[in-house]
Image (tube, rainbow, N blue to C red; front, top):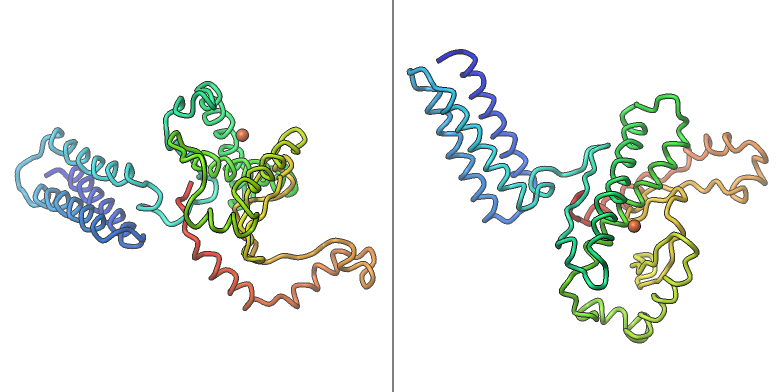
Length: 293
Ligand SMILES: [Fe+2]
């Protein structure tokens, strides 16, 4: 066998091992894991057979092996690409989540034209903008622009990406029209009734000036639900994230002692950070596992 073929087949085996390792490390059902592992094992043993055979291989057979591997991976990805093959979204590699229904599925309430533009143009622009900002902030590609520019970009596009991702999955063509189960119990407990909540949420949405969002929130800090409007969404905020470490830089936090020396206050503050507390918050926060986009 030519060296070139041999190396190529070996690289296919290595690729299969990477996928297996990813499957080992992610939390999926044993049934799924066993199924994918078996497919990968069978595929890899065919490659080993090829490697051991003496006869000269045809391009066609090698190509078939590669395609079989791609089919297996495609099968895994179609089930749930991110959960099954990776544990995080690398900086700058967010992707537009596919809509969980057809573009015309929400008609007549929301037209196909709106859904198509909203998803493929507006949301895609947020994904692209967030990726660009993250590359600048976390992979050292800032260029000439100041840090503040990229923080503003991350907040604007990140808020857009995270909120729209919640929004698409918050909707369905098969709506039951009213809540039930645990969420209904909590709504009744906190707002009195489903109707009272619906009225408050509707009024909140109507109160938004220009661009923004109406949001039903869970407040872990108060153990209850809340309704809030988010004005626009770019005010240096990333919703759907959990703060782990915060530093108050309002003047009231330092002025009596440091007067105009804000930088001195910030420098000194690092001496009083409780990292055990930050670690506790981190360990609690990362228990939340959602699909990655
Ligand atoms: Fe939008």
